[in-house]
Amino acid sequence: MNIQESAISQEPTFRQSVDLMFNRAVALMDLPPGLEEKIRVCNATYTVRFGVRLRGQITTFTGYRSVHSDHMEPVKGGIRFAMAVNQDEVEALAALMTYKCALVETPFGGSKGGLRIDPREYDEHELELITRRFAYELIKRDMINPAQNVPAPDMGTSEREMAWMADQYARMNTTDINSRACVTGKPLNSGGISGRVEATGRGVQYALREFFRHPEDVAKSGLEGSLEGKRVVVQGLGNVGFHAAKFLSEEDGAIITGIVERDGGLWRDEGLDIDGVHDWISRHGGVAGYPEGTHVADGNLLMEEPCDILIPAAVEGVINLANAENIKARLIIEAANGPVTYGADEILRNKGVVIIPDMYANAGGVTVSYFEWVKNLSHIRFGRMQRRQEEARHQLVVDELERLVTVTNSGLTLSPGFKDKYLRGADELELVRSGLDDTMRIAYQSMREKWHSREEVQDLRVAAYLVAIERVAASYRAKGL
Ligand code: GLU
Image (cartoon, rainbow, N blue to C red; front, side, top):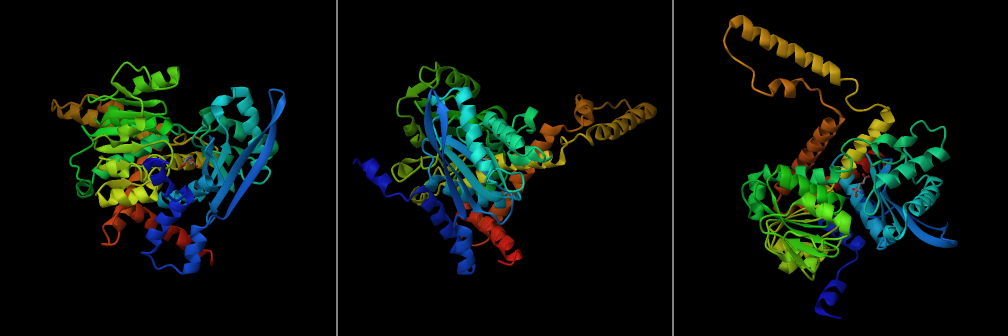
Protein backbone atom coordinates (compact mmCIF):
# COMPACT_ATOMS: atom_id res chain seq x y z
CA MET A 1 0.00 0.00 0.00
CA ASN A 2 1.54 3.35 -0.97
CA ILE A 3 1.28 6.53 1.13
CA GLN A 4 -1.70 7.78 -0.83
CA GLU A 5 -3.63 4.54 -0.41
CA SER A 6 -2.85 4.31 3.29
CA ALA A 7 -3.96 7.91 3.84
CA ILE A 8 -7.23 7.20 2.06
CA SER A 9 -7.81 4.00 4.04
CA GLN A 10 -8.05 6.09 7.22
CA GLU A 11 -11.00 7.95 5.79
CA PRO A 12 -14.46 7.25 7.14
CA THR A 13 -17.02 6.07 4.59
CA PHE A 14 -19.13 8.70 2.83
CA ARG A 15 -22.06 7.98 5.14
CA GLN A 16 -19.83 8.26 8.22
CA SER A 17 -18.32 11.45 6.86
CA VAL A 18 -21.78 13.05 6.57
CA ASP A 19 -22.65 11.88 10.10
CA LEU A 20 -19.40 13.29 11.49
CA MET A 21 -20.15 16.63 9.88
CA PHE A 22 -23.67 16.48 11.31
CA ASN A 23 -22.19 15.73 14.75
CA ARG A 24 -19.93 18.79 14.62
CA ALA A 25 -22.98 20.97 14.14
CA VAL A 26 -25.29 19.22 16.54
CA ALA A 27 -22.67 19.57 19.29
CA LEU A 28 -23.37 23.30 19.15
CA MET A 29 -27.12 22.81 19.54
CA ASP A 30 -29.28 21.92 22.41
CA LEU A 31 -31.39 19.14 20.96
CA PRO A 32 -32.72 16.31 23.09
CA PRO A 33 -30.47 13.29 22.29
CA GLY A 34 -33.45 11.27 21.09
CA LEU A 35 -34.41 13.87 18.52
CA GLU A 36 -30.80 14.28 17.45
CA GLU A 37 -30.57 10.55 16.77
CA LYS A 38 -33.93 10.54 14.97
CA ILE A 39 -32.73 13.23 12.58
CA ARG A 40 -29.31 11.66 11.98
CA VAL A 41 -30.39 8.14 11.07
CA CYS A 42 -31.57 7.03 7.68
CA ASN A 43 -35.19 5.90 7.97
CA ALA A 44 -35.19 3.15 5.38
CA THR A 45 -33.23 1.81 2.46
CA TYR A 46 -34.81 -0.46 -0.06
CA THR A 47 -32.57 -2.76 -2.08
CA VAL A 48 -33.91 -4.42 -5.17
CA ARG A 49 -32.34 -7.00 -7.45
CA PHE A 50 -34.09 -7.57 -10.72
CA GLY A 51 -33.36 -9.37 -13.93
CA VAL A 52 -33.61 -8.01 -17.45
CA ARG A 53 -33.29 -10.19 -20.55
CA LEU A 54 -30.57 -8.59 -22.65
CA ARG A 55 -28.61 -9.98 -25.58
CA GLY A 56 -30.17 -13.40 -25.12
CA GLN A 57 -29.49 -13.81 -21.41
CA ILE A 58 -30.75 -12.54 -18.09
CA THR A 59 -28.65 -9.89 -16.40
CA THR A 60 -29.29 -9.10 -12.74
CA PHE A 61 -29.06 -5.50 -11.57
CA THR A 62 -28.94 -4.09 -8.05
CA GLY A 63 -30.69 -0.84 -7.24
CA TYR A 64 -31.45 1.20 -4.14
CA ARG A 65 -33.83 3.87 -2.96
CA SER A 66 -33.08 5.28 0.44
CA VAL A 67 -35.33 7.58 2.46
CA HIS A 68 -33.36 9.53 5.01
CA SER A 69 -36.14 11.61 6.50
CA ASP A 70 -39.82 11.86 5.75
CA HIS A 71 -40.56 14.74 8.11
CA MET A 72 -42.00 16.26 4.93
CA GLU A 73 -43.48 14.36 2.04
CA PRO A 74 -42.90 13.74 -0.73
CA VAL A 75 -39.26 12.91 -0.19
CA LYS A 76 -36.96 14.04 -2.95
CA GLY A 77 -33.62 13.23 -4.50
CA GLY A 78 -31.97 11.99 -7.64
CA ILE A 79 -31.33 8.53 -8.99
CA ARG A 80 -27.79 7.84 -10.07
CA PHE A 81 -26.55 5.22 -12.50
CA ALA A 82 -22.95 4.29 -11.71
CA MET A 83 -20.82 1.30 -10.84
CA ALA A 84 -19.81 2.88 -7.53
CA VAL A 85 -23.41 2.94 -6.26
CA ASN A 86 -23.86 1.11 -2.94
CA GLN A 87 -25.96 1.37 0.19
CA ASP A 88 -23.50 3.55 2.07
CA GLU A 89 -23.42 6.03 -0.80
CA VAL A 90 -27.19 6.32 -1.33
CA GLU A 91 -27.72 6.74 2.41
CA ALA A 92 -25.12 9.52 2.59
CA LEU A 93 -26.68 11.21 -0.42
CA ALA A 94 -30.21 10.83 0.98
CA ALA A 95 -29.09 12.47 4.23
CA LEU A 96 -27.58 15.35 2.28
CA MET A 97 -30.89 15.74 0.45
CA THR A 98 -32.74 16.16 3.76
CA TYR A 99 -30.42 18.95 4.85
CA LYS A 100 -30.30 20.51 1.38
CA CYS A 101 -34.08 20.69 1.07
CA ALA A 102 -34.39 22.19 4.55
CA LEU A 103 -31.69 24.77 3.84
CA VAL A 104 -33.21 26.04 0.60
CA GLU A 105 -36.78 25.64 1.84
CA THR A 106 -38.09 23.15 -0.66
CA PRO A 107 -40.87 21.32 1.16
CA PHE A 108 -39.44 17.81 0.88
CA GLY A 109 -37.82 15.13 2.96
CA GLY A 110 -34.56 13.62 1.73
CA SER A 111 -34.15 10.55 -0.45
CA LYS A 112 -31.75 9.17 -3.02
CA GLY A 113 -31.57 6.24 -5.37
CA GLY A 114 -29.01 4.45 -7.39
CA LEU A 115 -28.52 1.62 -9.82
CA ARG A 116 -25.23 -0.26 -10.05
CA ILE A 117 -24.61 -0.04 -13.75
CA ASP A 118 -22.15 1.42 -16.21
CA PRO A 119 -24.62 3.12 -18.57
CA ARG A 120 -21.97 3.39 -21.29
CA GLU A 121 -22.07 -0.39 -21.71
CA TYR A 122 -25.65 -0.41 -22.98
CA ASP A 123 -27.39 1.02 -26.00
CA GLU A 124 -30.42 3.27 -25.69
CA HIS A 125 -32.99 0.53 -26.12
CA GLU A 126 -31.34 -1.64 -23.46
CA LEU A 127 -31.11 1.30 -21.08
CA GLU A 128 -34.79 1.98 -21.56
CA LEU A 129 -35.65 -1.62 -20.67
CA ILE A 130 -33.44 -1.50 -17.58
CA THR A 131 -34.70 1.91 -16.45
CA ARG A 132 -38.36 0.98 -16.90
CA ARG A 133 -37.85 -2.24 -15.00
CA PHE A 134 -36.10 -0.43 -12.12
CA ALA A 135 -38.86 2.19 -12.13
CA TYR A 136 -41.51 -0.57 -12.06
CA GLU A 137 -39.90 -2.04 -8.94
CA LEU A 138 -39.85 1.36 -7.23
CA ILE A 139 -43.35 2.40 -8.36
CA LYS A 140 -45.04 -0.71 -7.03
CA ARG A 141 -43.65 0.11 -3.58
CA ASP A 142 -44.61 3.81 -3.80
CA MET A 143 -40.98 4.78 -4.07
CA ILE A 144 -41.84 6.76 -7.14
CA ASN A 145 -45.04 8.67 -6.46
CA PRO A 146 -46.00 12.36 -6.76
CA ALA A 147 -47.18 12.49 -3.14
CA GLN A 148 -44.52 10.31 -1.56
CA ASN A 149 -41.24 10.04 -3.37
CA VAL A 150 -40.15 12.10 -6.36
CA PRO A 151 -36.83 11.18 -8.04
CA ALA A 152 -34.79 13.37 -10.37
CA PRO A 153 -31.65 13.05 -12.47
CA ASP A 154 -28.23 12.59 -10.92
CA MET A 155 -24.91 11.24 -12.14
CA GLY A 156 -25.41 8.97 -15.14
CA THR A 157 -29.07 9.88 -15.64
CA SER A 158 -30.73 12.73 -17.49
CA GLU A 159 -34.02 13.97 -18.91
CA ARG A 160 -34.26 10.83 -21.01
CA GLU A 161 -34.36 8.42 -18.07
CA MET A 162 -36.81 10.70 -16.24
CA ALA A 163 -39.19 10.61 -19.22
CA TRP A 164 -39.09 6.80 -19.20
CA MET A 165 -39.78 6.71 -15.47
CA ALA A 166 -42.65 9.20 -15.72
CA ASP A 167 -44.18 7.21 -18.56
CA GLN A 168 -43.79 3.97 -16.62
CA TYR A 169 -45.58 5.54 -13.66
CA ALA A 170 -48.39 6.86 -15.90
CA ARG A 171 -48.89 3.39 -17.40
CA MET A 172 -49.18 1.85 -13.96
CA ASN A 173 -51.41 4.63 -12.56
CA THR A 174 -53.72 5.47 -15.39
CA THR A 175 -56.17 7.48 -13.26
CA ASP A 176 -53.62 9.60 -11.40
CA ILE A 177 -54.16 13.09 -12.78
CA ASN A 178 -50.92 14.23 -11.13
CA SER A 179 -48.81 11.46 -12.56
CA ARG A 180 -46.36 13.84 -14.22
CA ALA A 181 -45.29 15.11 -10.80
CA CYS A 182 -43.91 11.65 -9.93
CA VAL A 183 -40.45 12.61 -11.14
CA THR A 184 -38.69 15.88 -12.01
CA GLY A 185 -35.99 16.78 -14.49
CA LYS A 186 -38.18 15.60 -17.37
CA PRO A 187 -37.87 16.95 -20.91
CA LEU A 188 -40.09 19.97 -21.64
CA ASN A 189 -42.40 17.92 -23.81
CA SER A 190 -43.06 15.45 -21.00
CA GLY A 191 -43.95 18.01 -18.36
CA GLY A 192 -40.48 19.38 -17.63
CA ILE A 193 -39.65 22.99 -16.89
CA SER A 194 -37.40 25.47 -18.71
CA GLY A 195 -34.02 25.84 -17.07
CA ARG A 196 -33.93 22.51 -15.18
CA VAL A 197 -31.04 21.00 -17.16
CA GLU A 198 -28.64 23.82 -16.27
CA ALA A 199 -30.20 24.51 -12.85
CA THR A 200 -27.47 23.02 -10.66
CA GLY A 201 -24.70 24.81 -12.58
CA ARG A 202 -26.73 28.01 -12.56
CA GLY A 203 -27.18 27.60 -8.80
CA VAL A 204 -23.40 27.33 -8.37
CA GLN A 205 -23.04 30.62 -10.26
CA TYR A 206 -25.72 32.34 -8.15
CA ALA A 207 -24.13 30.96 -4.97
CA LEU A 208 -20.75 32.43 -5.92
CA ARG A 209 -22.31 35.74 -6.90
CA GLU A 210 -24.00 35.94 -3.52
CA PHE A 211 -20.77 35.02 -1.70
CA PHE A 212 -18.94 37.83 -3.52
CA ARG A 213 -21.68 40.29 -2.51
CA HIS A 214 -20.33 40.03 1.05
CA PRO A 215 -16.78 41.47 1.19
CA GLU A 216 -16.48 40.40 4.82
CA ASP A 217 -16.98 36.75 3.81
CA VAL A 218 -14.72 37.06 0.78
CA ALA A 219 -11.99 38.45 3.06
CA LYS A 220 -12.19 35.32 5.22
CA SER A 221 -10.98 33.31 2.25
CA GLY A 222 -8.13 35.72 1.60
CA LEU A 223 -9.62 36.75 -1.73
CA GLU A 224 -10.95 40.17 -2.63
CA GLY A 225 -13.02 41.94 -5.27
CA SER A 226 -15.52 40.20 -7.50
CA LEU A 227 -15.64 37.07 -9.63
CA GLU A 228 -14.08 39.02 -12.52
CA GLY A 229 -10.62 37.66 -13.29
CA LYS A 230 -10.73 34.92 -10.64
CA ARG A 231 -8.80 31.82 -11.65
CA VAL A 232 -10.91 28.70 -11.43
CA VAL A 233 -10.23 24.96 -11.63
CA VAL A 234 -13.19 22.70 -12.36
CA GLN A 235 -13.05 19.00 -11.57
CA GLY A 236 -15.57 17.17 -13.75
CA LEU A 237 -17.12 18.70 -16.84
CA GLY A 238 -20.42 16.81 -16.62
CA ASN A 239 -23.75 18.60 -16.57
CA VAL A 240 -23.05 20.57 -13.38
CA GLY A 241 -19.37 21.37 -13.97
CA PHE A 242 -19.97 22.32 -17.57
CA HIS A 243 -22.79 24.75 -16.87
CA ALA A 244 -21.09 26.31 -13.85
CA ALA A 245 -17.85 26.82 -15.80
CA LYS A 246 -19.67 28.13 -18.85
CA PHE A 247 -21.78 30.68 -16.97
CA LEU A 248 -18.91 31.84 -14.73
CA SER A 249 -16.58 32.39 -17.66
CA GLU A 250 -19.12 33.84 -20.09
CA GLU A 251 -21.12 35.99 -17.70
CA ASP A 252 -18.91 36.80 -14.71
CA GLY A 253 -15.45 37.14 -16.23
CA ALA A 254 -13.93 34.21 -14.32
CA ILE A 255 -11.01 32.44 -16.02
CA ILE A 256 -11.21 28.67 -16.15
CA THR A 257 -7.54 27.73 -16.08
CA GLY A 258 -7.95 24.02 -15.33
CA ILE A 259 -10.37 21.24 -16.15
CA VAL A 260 -10.05 17.76 -14.68
CA GLU A 261 -11.68 14.90 -16.53
CA ARG A 262 -11.62 11.12 -16.42
CA ASP A 263 -8.80 10.77 -18.95
CA GLY A 264 -6.62 13.59 -17.62
CA GLY A 265 -6.69 17.32 -17.27
CA LEU A 266 -6.30 20.47 -19.32
CA TRP A 267 -4.50 23.61 -18.24
CA ARG A 268 -4.35 26.99 -19.90
CA ASP A 269 -3.22 30.12 -18.03
CA GLU A 270 -5.26 32.41 -20.28
CA GLY A 271 -8.41 30.37 -19.71
CA LEU A 272 -10.06 27.49 -21.56
CA ASP A 273 -13.00 27.78 -23.93
CA ILE A 274 -15.65 25.78 -22.10
CA ASP A 275 -17.95 25.16 -25.05
CA GLY A 276 -14.94 24.07 -27.08
CA VAL A 277 -13.75 21.56 -24.46
CA HIS A 278 -17.26 20.28 -23.84
CA ASP A 279 -17.82 19.75 -27.51
CA TRP A 280 -14.48 17.94 -27.80
CA ILE A 281 -15.36 15.61 -24.92
CA SER A 282 -18.71 14.70 -26.46
CA ARG A 283 -17.06 13.92 -29.78
CA HIS A 284 -13.91 12.15 -28.54
CA GLY A 285 -14.96 10.79 -25.15
CA GLY A 286 -12.31 12.73 -23.23
CA VAL A 287 -10.03 15.75 -23.13
CA ALA A 288 -6.98 14.04 -24.68
CA GLY A 289 -5.93 15.65 -27.94
CA TYR A 290 -7.76 18.92 -27.30
CA PRO A 291 -5.81 21.47 -29.32
CA GLU A 292 -5.71 24.26 -26.73
CA GLY A 293 -3.70 24.29 -23.48
CA THR A 294 -1.57 21.56 -21.93
CA HIS A 295 -2.80 18.01 -21.37
CA VAL A 296 -1.85 16.47 -18.03
CA ALA A 297 -2.18 12.68 -17.76
CA ASP A 298 -2.90 12.64 -14.02
CA GLY A 299 -5.68 15.22 -14.11
CA ASN A 300 -6.30 15.17 -10.38
CA LEU A 301 -2.97 16.91 -9.87
CA LEU A 302 -4.52 20.04 -11.38
CA MET A 303 -6.67 20.39 -8.27
CA GLU A 304 -3.41 21.09 -6.43
CA GLU A 305 -2.32 23.87 -8.80
CA PRO A 306 -2.54 27.49 -7.62
CA CYS A 307 -5.97 28.99 -8.32
CA ASP A 308 -8.52 31.16 -6.54
CA ILE A 309 -11.56 28.92 -6.71
CA LEU A 310 -11.74 25.14 -6.95
CA ILE A 311 -15.02 23.60 -8.09
CA PRO A 312 -15.23 19.85 -7.53
CA ALA A 313 -18.22 18.95 -9.68
CA ALA A 314 -18.15 15.18 -10.08
CA VAL A 315 -18.08 12.59 -7.33
CA GLU A 316 -17.58 12.31 -3.59
CA GLY A 317 -14.25 12.04 -1.85
CA VAL A 318 -11.99 13.64 -4.47
CA ILE A 319 -10.47 16.00 -1.91
CA ASN A 320 -9.25 13.69 0.81
CA LEU A 321 -6.47 13.06 3.30
CA ALA A 322 -4.07 12.31 0.47
CA ASN A 323 -4.30 15.67 -1.29
CA ALA A 324 -5.98 18.20 1.06
CA GLU A 325 -2.67 19.53 2.33
CA ASN A 326 -1.60 20.33 -1.26
CA ILE A 327 -4.72 22.26 -2.25
CA LYS A 328 -3.86 25.90 -2.91
CA ALA A 329 -7.28 27.32 -3.78
CA ARG A 330 -8.61 29.85 -1.27
CA LEU A 331 -12.23 29.05 -1.94
CA ILE A 332 -13.82 25.68 -2.69
CA ILE A 333 -17.39 25.45 -3.85
CA GLU A 334 -18.80 21.93 -3.67
CA ALA A 335 -20.81 21.54 -6.84
CA ALA A 336 -20.76 17.77 -6.29
CA ASN A 337 -22.17 16.02 -3.23
CA GLY A 338 -19.53 15.16 -0.64
CA PRO A 339 -16.38 15.97 -2.65
CA VAL A 340 -14.45 16.89 0.50
CA THR A 341 -14.05 14.12 3.08
CA TYR A 342 -14.40 14.79 6.78
CA GLY A 343 -10.64 14.63 7.35
CA ALA A 344 -9.87 16.86 4.37
CA ASP A 345 -12.45 19.35 5.56
CA GLU A 346 -10.57 19.73 8.82
CA ILE A 347 -7.19 20.17 7.11
CA LEU A 348 -8.60 22.80 4.76
CA ARG A 349 -10.37 24.65 7.57
CA ASN A 350 -7.10 24.85 9.47
CA LYS A 351 -5.48 26.30 6.37
CA GLY A 352 -8.13 29.02 6.27
CA VAL A 353 -9.73 27.79 3.05
CA VAL A 354 -13.39 28.75 2.81
CA ILE A 355 -15.67 25.94 1.65
CA ILE A 356 -19.13 26.67 0.32
CA PRO A 357 -20.78 23.37 1.25
CA ASP A 358 -22.54 20.96 -1.10
CA MET A 359 -25.93 21.11 0.56
CA TYR A 360 -26.08 24.77 -0.40
CA ALA A 361 -23.82 24.98 -3.44
CA ASN A 362 -25.58 22.37 -5.55
CA ALA A 363 -29.12 23.01 -4.34
CA GLY A 364 -30.08 24.68 -7.62
CA GLY A 365 -31.13 21.32 -9.02
CA VAL A 366 -33.65 20.45 -6.36
CA THR A 367 -34.87 24.05 -6.25
CA VAL A 368 -35.86 24.01 -9.90
CA SER A 369 -37.18 20.47 -9.42
CA TYR A 370 -39.51 21.97 -6.84
CA PHE A 371 -40.73 24.50 -9.39
CA GLU A 372 -41.28 21.68 -11.87
CA TRP A 373 -43.24 19.63 -9.34
CA VAL A 374 -45.44 22.66 -8.54
CA LYS A 375 -45.93 23.27 -12.26
CA ASN A 376 -47.01 19.65 -12.75
CA LEU A 377 -49.44 19.79 -9.87
CA SER A 378 -50.92 23.08 -11.06
CA HIS A 379 -51.09 21.80 -14.65
CA ILE A 380 -50.11 25.16 -16.06
CA ARG A 381 -46.90 26.77 -17.28
CA PHE A 382 -45.50 29.53 -15.07
CA GLY A 383 -46.35 32.97 -16.41
CA ARG A 384 -49.14 31.78 -18.70
CA MET A 385 -51.84 33.79 -16.94
CA GLN A 386 -49.89 36.96 -16.16
CA ARG A 387 -47.44 37.54 -18.96
CA ARG A 388 -49.53 39.46 -21.48
CA GLN A 389 -51.37 41.34 -18.77
CA GLU A 390 -48.02 42.45 -17.37
CA GLU A 391 -46.98 43.57 -20.84
CA ALA A 392 -50.22 45.52 -21.28
CA ARG A 393 -49.70 47.40 -18.03
CA HIS A 394 -46.12 48.21 -18.94
CA GLN A 395 -47.34 49.42 -22.31
CA LEU A 396 -49.57 51.91 -20.48
CA VAL A 397 -46.56 53.38 -18.68
CA VAL A 398 -44.50 53.61 -21.85
CA ASP A 399 -47.38 55.27 -23.76
CA GLU A 400 -47.81 57.75 -20.96
CA LEU A 401 -44.08 58.56 -20.85
CA GLU A 402 -44.05 59.11 -24.59
CA ARG A 403 -47.14 61.33 -24.38
CA LEU A 404 -45.45 63.46 -21.69
CA VAL A 405 -42.31 63.78 -23.79
CA THR A 406 -44.42 64.98 -26.70
CA VAL A 407 -46.72 67.38 -24.86
CA THR A 408 -43.90 68.96 -22.84
CA ASN A 409 -41.81 69.22 -25.98
CA SER A 410 -38.81 68.59 -23.72
CA GLY A 411 -36.69 66.85 -26.33
CA LEU A 412 -36.11 64.01 -23.86
CA THR A 413 -35.94 60.47 -25.23
CA LEU A 414 -36.16 57.04 -23.67
CA SER A 415 -32.85 55.14 -23.44
CA PRO A 416 -32.18 52.80 -26.34
CA GLY A 417 -33.45 49.30 -25.61
CA PHE A 418 -35.52 50.45 -22.64
CA LYS A 419 -38.85 49.84 -24.32
CA ASP A 420 -37.98 46.34 -25.47
CA LYS A 421 -36.65 45.30 -22.09
CA TYR A 422 -39.40 46.91 -20.07
CA LEU A 423 -42.29 45.80 -22.23
CA ARG A 424 -41.46 42.12 -22.31
CA GLY A 425 -43.35 40.11 -19.69
CA ALA A 426 -41.36 37.36 -17.97
CA ASP A 427 -41.52 33.91 -19.54
CA GLU A 428 -41.11 30.64 -17.69
CA LEU A 429 -37.32 30.62 -17.98
CA GLU A 430 -36.98 34.10 -16.53
CA LEU A 431 -39.30 33.20 -13.68
CA VAL A 432 -37.35 30.04 -12.96
CA ARG A 433 -34.10 32.00 -12.88
CA SER A 434 -35.58 34.64 -10.65
CA GLY A 435 -36.93 32.00 -8.25
CA LEU A 436 -33.60 30.21 -8.21
CA ASP A 437 -31.63 33.40 -7.64
CA ASP A 438 -33.90 34.40 -4.78
CA THR A 439 -33.61 30.94 -3.22
CA MET A 440 -29.81 30.94 -3.41
CA ARG A 441 -29.53 34.43 -1.96
CA ILE A 442 -31.87 33.79 0.94
CA ALA A 443 -30.31 30.45 1.81
CA TYR A 444 -26.82 31.99 1.77
CA GLN A 445 -27.98 34.76 4.06
CA SER A 446 -29.45 32.30 6.53
CA MET A 447 -26.12 30.42 6.56
CA ARG A 448 -23.95 33.50 6.97
CA GLU A 449 -26.13 34.77 9.77
CA LYS A 450 -25.26 31.60 11.69
CA TRP A 451 -21.62 31.80 10.61
CA HIS A 452 -21.22 35.25 12.08
CA SER A 453 -23.47 34.72 15.08
CA ARG A 454 -21.11 32.79 17.35
CA GLU A 455 -17.39 32.23 17.70
CA GLU A 456 -17.86 28.44 17.69
CA VAL A 457 -19.45 28.46 14.23
CA GLN A 458 -16.23 28.53 12.30
CA ASP A 459 -17.29 27.58 8.84
CA LEU A 460 -20.14 27.66 6.37
CA ARG A 461 -20.64 23.90 6.52
CA VAL A 462 -21.46 23.90 10.20
CA ALA A 463 -23.61 26.99 9.64
CA ALA A 464 -25.52 25.19 6.88
CA TYR A 465 -26.07 22.13 9.07
CA LEU A 466 -27.28 24.34 11.91
CA VAL A 467 -29.90 26.02 9.75
CA ALA A 468 -31.02 22.72 8.24
CA ILE A 469 -31.12 20.71 11.46
CA GLU A 470 -33.05 23.45 13.26
CA ARG A 471 -35.69 23.38 10.54
CA VAL A 472 -35.98 19.60 10.47
CA ALA A 473 -36.17 19.53 14.26
CA ALA A 474 -38.91 22.17 14.23
CA SER A 475 -40.83 20.08 11.75
CA TYR A 476 -40.56 16.92 13.91
CA ARG A 477 -41.57 18.93 16.99
CA ALA A 478 -44.60 20.34 15.20
CA LYS A 479 -45.67 16.78 14.43
CA GLY A 480 -45.49 15.98 18.11
CA LEU A 481 -42.52 13.64 17.75
N1 GLU B 1 -29.74 14.92 -7.97
C1 GLU B 1 -29.84 16.29 -7.60
C2 GLU B 1 -29.26 16.52 -6.21
O1 GLU B 1 -28.46 15.77 -5.74
C3 GLU B 1 -31.23 16.82 -7.78
C4 GLU B 1 -32.26 16.25 -6.87
C5 GLU B 1 -33.69 16.67 -7.22
O2 GLU B 1 -33.87 17.52 -8.08
O3 GLU B 1 -34.58 16.14 -6.60
O4 GLU B 1 -29.52 17.49 -5.57
